[in-house]
Image 1: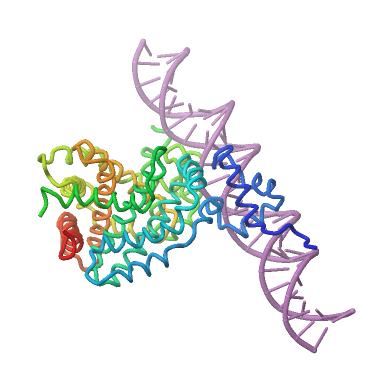
Image 2: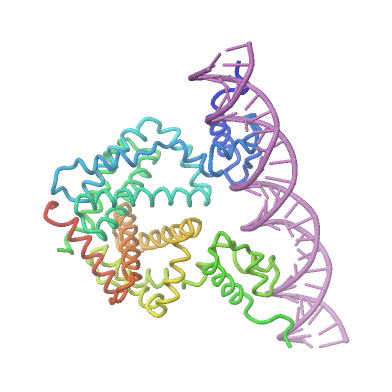
Length: 192
Length: 192
DNA sequence: GCGGTGATTGCACTCGGTGGCATCACCGTA
DNA sequence: TACGGTGATGCCACCGAGTGCAATCACCGC
């Protein structure tokens, strides 16, 4: 018989998310979380680097997947298309399943400046990953970095559209549509 | 005769930046800052919302300037060109003067994850400002948001090039060059 | 000289996060 | 069966950021 109930990390996460939904992120203390999970405050910090991390720990690290997908695009593919293809790939695995959970989490994050900060850090990491993958495809450094941020922006704009109440499309479709919108607006009549 | 030395806010900022350069952001406590400035710890938080804010308080709020400049672009101008024109305008005023100070500050920020987080928040605000200005020009919402982030990325990639040791160009020139790099890479041979 | 206003101060408090160490379950091995 | 290693958990003391509240003081207008 185990001295401790199993899956401490999972219990902490569950308790934390429930409390964040109930009373918001800032008003929830780590002590409350560990109390609900039946664990010690110190134990929380053995599983999560800080209070914010428990929110983002759930999402799979799809960065490697994205890198591979970008690398596998046919040579000569436009960098933005390649980057977006990588994101579509990752979106299929990580997002399409649990719309409900994602919406609840999104609300928690949207209500907390602290969590939005952390989300921006994640986005920056994603943009850097994409930029590195594009550089491997011989895209010049500055263009690769800008394209990385553009692809990330497309992804999150699409995710917001996907989270909208009346939405019927898949995330992949919305990513493609957002890329198209951007190209149409900026590559369009005036430029070139 | 004044009971207090004047310009408490300026003295705090000066003391803080000096200490951040000397020993880094995380290893500097607010107590050290106020001690050097000859003020009380509590007073620090009357002038700055938090420890990070003292780093960013210096930079002028050029967001209004950017909005106006974007609004003044000739009708039919490509959204990215309009956004970048706004940034070039702001860059001229805020950056071109003090290369040295900017470089030192850049190093402090680059060495501190906490400060980079805050910088990302500022960038997000900038992107939102640009997106709003573009929507005023009847650019559709999603495209405006993506273009906002792209313009911000162009700006900061250019700023990094501008901060590079051997650089001889102005920030404005580098912004234009980075936009050109991006367009060449992604609007180029494969697309369209 | 007097009252109002705003900047500064002092104090006590909460909370996030860390360091160090003890405890205990579990596992492989002798 | 005993033993030692490993990793998860618990406990305690501590630091530093940030807040709430009230007191103090300079300055300004009257």
